[in-house]
Length: 412
Image (cartoon, rainbow, N blue to C red; front, side, top):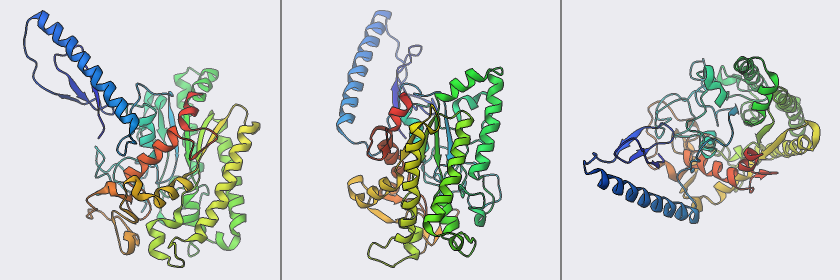
């Protein structure tokens, strides 16, 4: 948990505040003194606190924080809308019939509210990103957000979801990208009522919000490279599949634009040929990764980056898209794991079989003790620590973002 000091003027004690929950933790009992003494002591404590805070900030500026994203004074954008799969799902799959669920322990073992449906031990990438953007709480799942809370955003992501509607059907029910867009359309209708039918004001509001879309992983993992369930690998060559996938995704992103999105982040598919699930199944070369999958993914990623270039070139007037290179960032984390504090980069912290990747984390299974030393939480998903590092890198650096980083996008 990360903390921020906050001085409560109305109280007699300094309180330690969690900026996500606003929970109060009094440091000590108040002591009664004369009014003059109390005033002098108050000024003294404020001065000491200010000096201490400045020193801590200067220290953190010299160090690469390995633990927590630093909170802002307030949200840099009014709202944040999230579309994607299990990498960013925070509970939308909890109430549906599917194998793609994570609302049981040890999932959420390091999350304050325990297992919520997040497919990791703690926070997801978008949780960490929301903190960096200054939101006081995490963006809630669409399945639970109601009323005026929609003005702050919603998370529509669903485990096993893909660009194609049939993707992930092998795991059961889920909400595809097309269905997530329908849900967002319903949200826009609700927001329109808050703006009393004033479309100009609503569109102006939405144009200031951030939108995140992370799709494509399951279209390869739970579609193209699963020939026992899907015919796509026989229907299309790898280049042809990337092409049809990009065409459909372009239509979906255009629909998102038509609903009011202007500041949009789209993610490349990560290096899923190197996740524990694939490492447990594939031993065909020295790298141990399944390069057939990685090479197919690179075709999609290359096309997606070109799509962003075209959109920013005027294809969707007024839109500003940012390409997040999750492939390169995940590759760098794995290649330089030790420098980021990871001792284990080839197996899940929780799972069954070779590399803890043949079967994913089971209910009440014993997870590894030092989660921060593992790059992967289970057979498919990164740990909270990896999510935080990726969020920080894409927020303030252009090493993995194009043409600008997320902080710059928020400020537009």
